[in-house]
Length: 125
Length: 155
Image 1 (cartoon, one colour):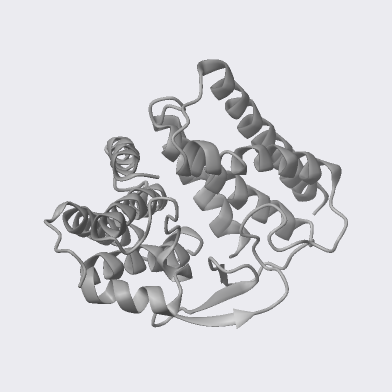
Image 2 (cartoon, chains in turn purple, brown):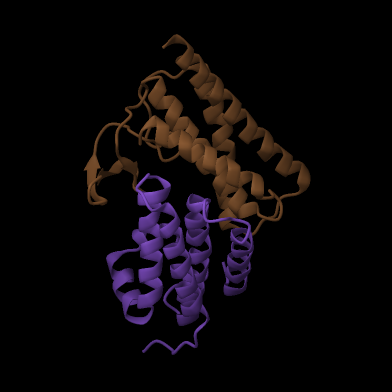
């Protein structure tokens, strides 16, 4: 998927997130994962770490080599998506206490991912 | 997770779903319907003893669970027989299932199969297709609710 389409999908999910209240914390975390993954792909495509025909689906499933490269140039984005994905286990598929706080953390990570995706990029060496 | 937690999550996700529009909020509607359905499915599978009511959470990796240490909130990886399913058939259930769960699983699979085209992909669904999604969700919920009520009635 190209950068324009990823942005459109991320924007669509973010508009839907605006309909959720704090009590909808599972859906907020899931929406942050969906939108955040699109922003992550925007960032990957823009810096040239991944071709537009090879989207990342979950940060957890990237190869060790891919993660090492991404950690050098998109450390904040990788950390943000890792955090959102970890919150899915504990608060979406799990019932640990603090769901609303977890959702707020996911939203902060989503903002971080969007910022990384829209920041000026330097060509890879 | 325990049945009570699955039911609590189902009620919350079902309430969230009512705030969303299957057209304008296509991605989040599909995802929330899927999550609501799988929580009700797990409650029914545990209630009929097809799977174990274990205090563990399914991870993104099929068959890998996270076991919570309740006092600290720390999660420890574990592999054990199901347990919660992540999606229909993931992991596969060896036990024969009541017909109501089979029908609900088929309906839930309809929603799960929307992910590639309508959530990860850019396709938008017309209104008549969205009506099919609502019907699949309603079937999933009504079949599983009936299974849970029947089990509760004989206890």
